[in-house]
Image (cartoon, rainbow, N blue to C red):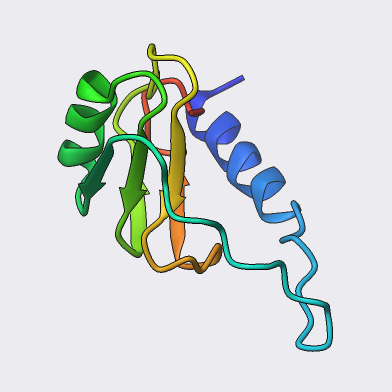
Amino acid sequence: MHLAVVSMLYVFAASLVAAPPDQPWFPKAPALPPPSGPVLEVATVEELFQAVENVPPGGTILLADGRYMLPSVLTVAADDVTLRSRSGNRHAVVVDGENSRHGEL
């Protein structure tokens, strides 16, 4: 199959995936406690890749609101690492692997 057709099918299939349900009347989860280990704050894809390389075990990476279009696979090698939205809004941070050469995270 031609690569452009495969890409179009992938985009079409991805558009069929439903977003998580979210209604104003749904109960809200309690706020997360502050991170207990080392915290690295990032606001760009480059900073995210650097943070993943440098985060120690038990650390937290706080992502500024935005869409992080990954150019390649993001691998976290340290144990017990947490990725969190700095704002606490789960809809405000998107880690997107669509444009990576592998098409995945």
